[in-house]
Image 1 (cartoon, each protein chain N blue to C red):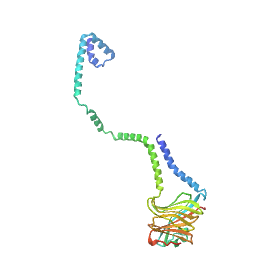
Image 2: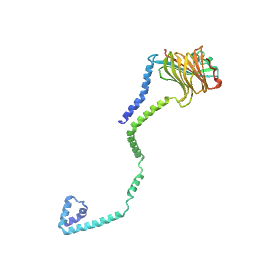
Image 3: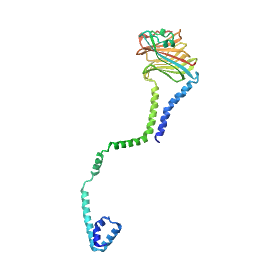
Image 4: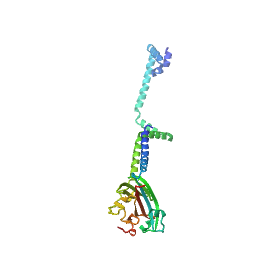
Length: 159
Length: 178
């Protein structure tokens, strides 16, 4: 037991440090829009099999179906999350594919962010951009088994 | 003590197995009694003869392999599985007492390193890096790395939406719009 004690303390510190840090960051994220940003990520599968427009996609973007040459649009995942600057938002698309969005700073009314579309640990898209506050942009074209992936990404510092 | 009693006790006397008081009595009597003294001397000589014969015989024997043979016999005796298990458990306990803190520290460091590594994107895969000179008021792209052969960038003014399209298939390439 004497030998075990330091090891147990070390293991407990290791086990609880990360959740405590995450909880502290989550509390910070609730403090207000100046310290946090709302990130919106949506994943849509577009294909030419059928003519189906997911009403959630239509609600997300009124002219979605006019921007791309596809007849069917299906929302497969969506996330809206307030996070502190520098903290990543992750949206899982499939078993191996996911999106990471890390808001970096607000400068000149633009939200600077890094967006990565990952396939396992390989980046299919890795981009750094500045988006107008409360704006939205789309990244599409990555092939999926059911069609083509289109990502809708937005950020807002206002509640 | 008379001669008869001494004669009966002489073998034990010569082997030193009498009590101190009897040893002293036999010795005193033998010194005063020539017959008993002679008997003591004869028995001593006989004992010496037997002893020398035994020592000579033992000296002629080859005992060099005795211990190795004994050790081999001991090794051949297989203890029961319960005893072996108990011995192994005691060894493990002793090892763990010494090494458990070190194992725990190494495991904690390895877990942290693994967690850190799992969050890292794989940057070993080469992907093409291109700078985009966009003049979109809503979206400014500083850097875009992608595995797609080419990409398009356009903006829909009606919905005020910027679009980056990755052209993985030539047939699906969208035309770039200013």
